[in-house]
Length: 240
Image (cartoon, rainbow, N blue to C red):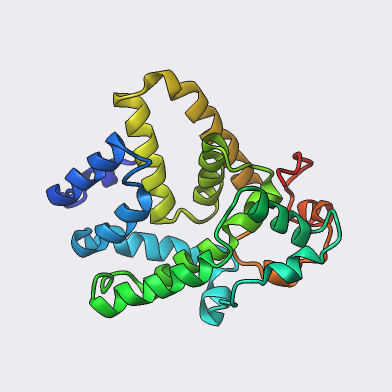
């Protein structure tokens, strides 16, 4: 970090939000980052909001994808069930079914996001970032299948670090902040496991091609091995 960063005008975390942050640090499974993400915008420093928006727009491939606003309806399980073994669609189907996940999560979150906007709760959330959080819910499990990170707490943390390396999105930044604060102040026995997961996910995210600006719904019948090679994901064992 340069000296200029320290010389910048002082900004601070809103103290009411800080209380909510520490609630998440204390009980991350009860008051998770999902809640913090929606609470932050009302009093977030404008410079931080602008920086996140600028970083997102600067990622190669982002501009075209953000302009297109690709947001398909969730895929029916019947379609996924027909995909051949070894394909992305089959891996995605098994990940959803084996982990008991909500098949319509993307649609439900999109509706929730729209309702918060209608209430004015997200009026300071830039449109591009709002779109990306909805799209992120749509592609999260596809990316689990491609990276090989499973749905255990360690796998989810590694996947979050992978996302953070590729898009540096506020949701994932908050996830890193909550996790590192939790292990630093409350659960130091978990430091090694947490940091190993974070480093593994971050390193894979940095070394692979960006997975966030792809139409994975149109690649259901493509073998996972082919996609991993195409995206420079190496030969990780498939989670699903």
